[in-house]
Length: 428
Image (cartoon, rainbow, N blue to C red; front, side, top):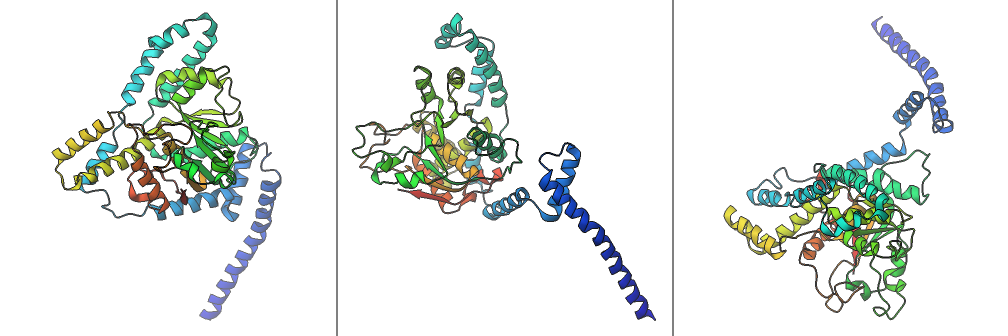
C-alpha cells in the first residue's frame, strides 16, 4: 500500500510538472518572439525590460555570455599568492608608486584660471574681442576639466573605456547603429599599437599592420621623405584608426591654419592626454576644426597608467641598487635618487598609455615599434638620438614583456581594474 501511495504521489508530481511545462513553453516562446521582433521598438519600457530579462534568464544573451566569460578569464589571470605584495619591500614600493605627484598642481592651475587669473601667454589672447566665443567655450571646458581632475583614483575605469570611448568612435564611423542594442563587452578583434621607435624601420611590417581591425599610432608620428628610401607603407603601414597624443603635439597643431593635426587623414579619431590645464585652450580651438572625435583621457585612467609606470620604474631602479636588502631609510634615499634621475618629472610615455587602452578594448594586441636598436635613431620620424629624461622606456619594456608572458598579476595595480587582459605579442 505504501509503495502504491508513493508511486501515486510521484505520478501526481510529474503530471503537475507537465501541466506547468505546457503553460510555460508557449509563454517562453511568446517572450522570445517578442524579444526578437519587437524588443528594440517596444514602446512600453517596463515591458521591454521584462521581456529581455525573462529571455536572457532562460536562453542567455551574447552580452551576458561575454560578461561571464571575461570575468572568468580575469579571475584566472589574477590568481596570486595571498601574501604576494605584503612584505615590507613591496609595501614600500607600492606606497611610492601610489603617489599622485601632480594632482594638486593641476587643480591649482585650473582654480586660478576659473577665477580669471590666467598665465601671461593666455591672458592677452583671451582678452581679444575676436575670440570672445572661444573664451566662453574655453571657460566651459575648464569647468568640465575641474570636475574630471577631482575624481578619485578608481582602477575600474578600464571597464568604462568600451562604453565611453570605443562606442563613441564606432558610432562616428558608423560601425554600429546608435539605435541598436549595444554589447558593452564587445572588443575590437585585432589591434596594432604602432610605437615611434627607430627600430620600426628595421623590418617591413607595413602590410601586417594594415591587416588589423584597429591601428593605433602615437603623437602624429609620420616620417619625412629623407627618412625612408622606400615607400613608407612597407615599414609603418598606411592605416590609422586612433591617434593617441599628448597636448604638446596638439599645441603645435593649433598654431597652424584650421588646426591641421591629422597627417593620417581627417577621419582619424584623437585621444588626447592633457599635460597641463592651459592646453584646454588648444582643445577648444581644434575641437571645432576636427571632424572625427577628439576625446580627452579620463583622470582616473591617467592615474592608473601613472601608478603602473612608477611601479615598474621604481622596482627596476631599486632592484639594481639591491633595494630588497635595504632598510627603510636607505629606500627613502633610493627614492630621492630615482626622482633626481628623472629631474622630478617622471612620466609614462604616450605609447604606454595607448597600450593600456588597447589591453582593455581589444581581443588581440600586437605591439610594433617598441624597443631600441643602436643602428637607428630614437624616433623613426626624427633625428632625435636620446630619450626624454622623464621617461623610463626600459621599465615599460618590462611591463610589455609581462603582458606577453601573461603575468598580469606581476604588478599590484592592473588586476584591481577587473578587466581581462588579452594575448599580447611584440614584433621587432
